[in-house]
Image 1: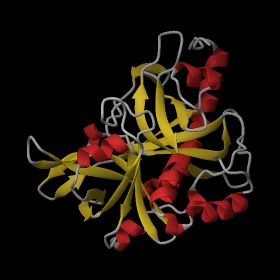
Image 2 (image 1 turned 90 degrees about the horizontal axis):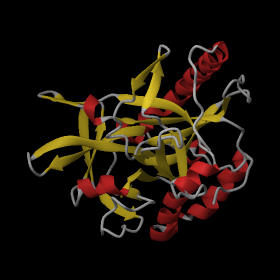
Image 3 (image 1 turned 135 degrees about the vertical axis):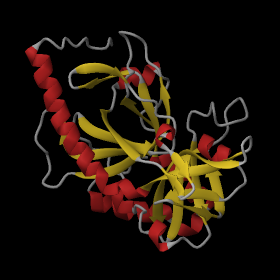
Image 4 (image 1 turned 180 degrees about the vertical axis):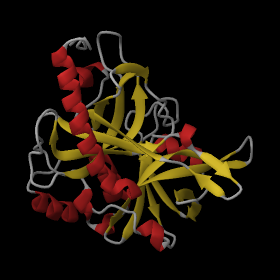
Length: 302
């Protein structure tokens, strides 16, 4: 299916864009509820021997076990070192064990289409970090979705990162988007029940003018939230719309001119659940998920 051409001189197109922007702002504000759960990750640059901002992760607590969800290629950069998580201007070094999807044909995760990792933190977690984590209630576990619901990608771009004598700082950024259709999943050879594709074009509208989209280097490992109840062109469809973590962002892929959108690719949480269940069976995650599925009023996504 060809990408629609947008004529910005057409009043109908301008009205549709304005409606999209209004609902997008609503989605961004709801997603901001969980800003603290998305944290920057740092790693030692072997060339400069300095700690540098590498990417993003999402913090999660399950049955009093503390996890950082991210992309496997992100943890490859961390290597055998402890995890360095930014919280405020401080970096917290946390020991743990890593569970990952299989490596790609190259022997790395750079060509691993799943690219999912769970870091199980076994060290004592500082209270200010622990307070940031999501719980099972904040995850997207229900199959039934409303049409054209907004998603929000959240993470930390490397170009926004700063290192000073006082410490490290970076700024969380959020981008609203929509899930793409089956044709895009087929084109990018992705499975819709395993991966999530959000539109992320090379050109974006700013004040009704096309501008080059910013680099999202550093967003890998960040969050993809589904904004439950906020759809394009419609008032909120539930009394209290909520952000639900749907996937972990792993990469951006370029589209084709006049054919397919450029996309942000995420790995859905069923993969991370599988890794936790395999390596930490004592948590009894399946039973915990089933309880939460029932509370959320739906069926399991896996």
